[in-house]
Length: 126
Image 1 (cartoon, rainbow, N blue to C red):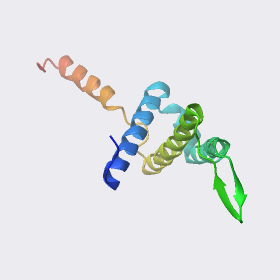
Image 2 (image 1 turned 90 degrees about the horizontal axis):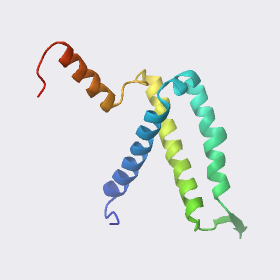
Image 3 (image 1 turned 135 degrees about the horizontal axis):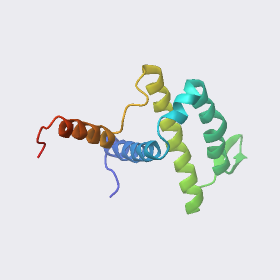
Image 4 (image 1 turned 135 degrees about the vertical axis):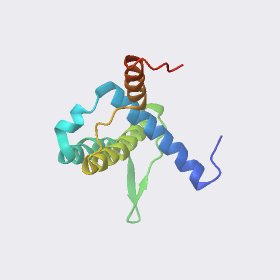
């Protein structure tokens, strides 16, 4: 269903972006980012992700203005959107690093740790 409001449209985008971020966090963990630091994250945005977005764009200059061709190929669309989501996520990662909250456990990891502690202490969690 097509969103009907600004909030609905952006909630959908935020949800997709968060899903991608969590999937990659599960796959790679926090250490690769922790090792890069904020400078590494910003460099990754500038050198890798922006380049992927640019490669997806084709167009021409008409009357002094850039006119972009639509991205019609599904693979190109996926690459373009994935790169934009990565840029958004890397920006949020840089904020998390700056605020000192990068590397917190995923909810699923936190719940399993909490459940393990409860069981170890002999508390019935059912």
